[in-house]
Amino acid sequence: MALNANAVRVAITGAAYVAPAKTVMPTDSTTNWPAAAVDIGWISDDGITESNSAESSEIKGWQGGQTVRKVISSSEMTFSFTCIETSKTVLELYHKGSKVVTATGKHALAIKAPGPDRRAYGFDVIDGTSHIRVVIPDGEVTETGDITYKGDEAVAYEITVTAYPGPDGTVAIKYSNDPAWGSTPAP
Image (spheres, rainbow, N blue to C red):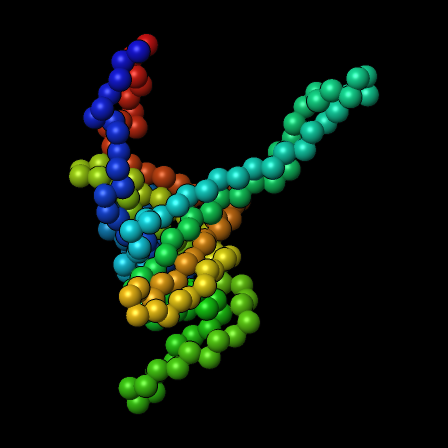
């Protein structure tokens, strides 16, 4: 078996973006993000966690009760991260459906019960010259963590974005300029 240490990737840095629903997003790993896509800001050193889950139902045969097939009954793709930069964008993502209002230099956030707030999301994951870009054409913040106000930690906003399927079933698209994506280890 041929091993290739040059194909080991580390997510050294990157960025997270949010844009209004139906924003035309990049279709490669190097094109600039559209003006409507806002950089969410500093993400904690835990980075971004991509989760894929699927549940299946077993179909049992009458003869002997053995499993003869499994059918995927549900699936979900989520991206979780913790924002450590406080901004209008982050506050409005975390408090879904609420808006920061500014008048005479003063800001207010009337926190409302969460409602639907679907948007486009994107993530850049960079390791030197290797770049992975994840585009979520239709996503929504579906979970938030607790906010802790403490003297020795950044105020942090834990966010989970769920990617919803488009008409063809695609929930996210990954693009890369990484040569390792096109190589196959030798047998």
